Image (tube, rainbow, N blue to C red):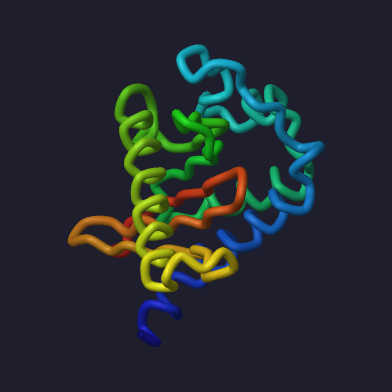
Length: 160
């Protein structure tokens, strides 16, 4: 466990920081897209997508630091609506149809884990909420930080 924490300190620290920034400035930093099909904010160019959604400078800086980390393959900022929509992304791995598939799967993972927690708590209304998920495979690690309205997911290569 100690190896995982020391090997990926930037991602482990920046993901909750970014979600905290999203949570505290949610009313002013994002304009929700109107349609999941016509989503102009999925550009991998940070400058153009930041202007398109009106991101706060703190969030912009945090996402920029996150995407510049050498092991980060990309990140996605998603709305939690049905269907889930991509608000912003970085990295070619999240471009086009592949990105939409990742978005749908990430939303299903969070929903499944939350449902499982509710079942464990016996349906109590004020039970546990998912705060952070870390999924490691042979090739990648997917870190997900959910919020009431948004999901922030980072895909990273643990080998670098």
